[in-house]
Image (cartoon, rainbow, N blue to C red; front, side, top):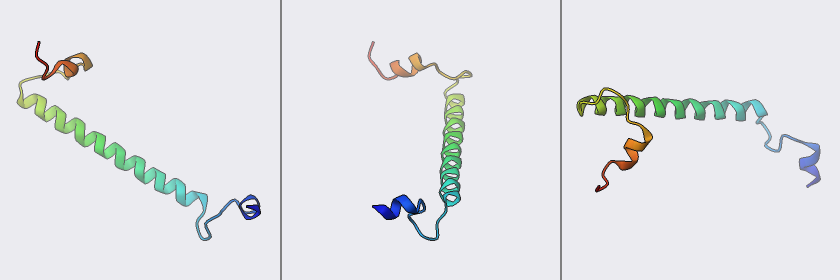
Length: 66
């Protein structure tokens, strides 16, 4: 326990910058996924004849009997 208090870098050979770079890579990957999903959704909407994006309310009622 004392070791972790005296040495904030508990993983030898790794520095905080390495962790930050990995988090940046994960964030960039997430943004790429979201961009892909938006493009895919826009293409599907165009194929269905919709020009504007659906609102949250419209999405909630899709597929429900009413």
